[in-house]
Image (cartoon, rainbow, N blue to C red):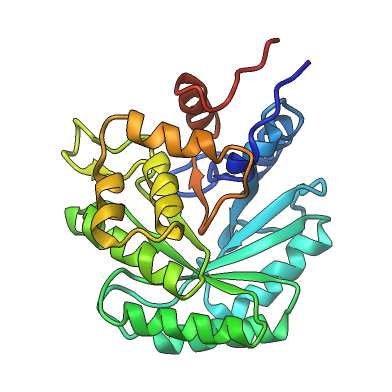
Length: 281
């Protein structure tokens, strides 16, 4: 008998095996994702993330849940979405950047709003830089959601330079800002492990996905920025595991999910921490 993944972790990990610097073909990634979908831990998985530039007319989608990563101009996104649907894929959502760091995010948000108005069946995640204009952008997203549009923010919390990794206080402020506006959010980049850690090769300190989940839990319980930042800064599992264990049968608050190139690695860490019971097979 296979062990089910607790509700708290359902759909937490998107399959980012096709995103750079991946060398997998779309066909191989689809086949591997289908294999995972047939496994005992299938409910941990979000959709397979597919770059818009990788879509071809012979995409072997096999009716799998996928998400489109918009690495093409917004004007080309509807065509990419229709190609996915025509191939039999179930398009869960779209992720697309609205601006580079330091640029005004509002014009890009306007483009995504128009896209969400055009295709009301499509969940849209606007990738907003953690820089100038962030709070105004979150206000705009909240306004869109207030009109019934399916749009929410996404943030990058890592990359190839130190300044792309927000501090615990900076990320805590973002989480609290999303809470105050009732905005669910996705994260991308740098989420390699469950617990906050420093990469010995780069020296960059990465946020842990369990830190973020525990931080979201305390945020919705009313914690302010300083307390949320303490949770994000934790490097020992104990203060993170217990809040998650106590909520294991509840829906996940605020933090929608993140992408991982290897979905087995987050699963292994959750098993090691005692939050998911391993398959007895």
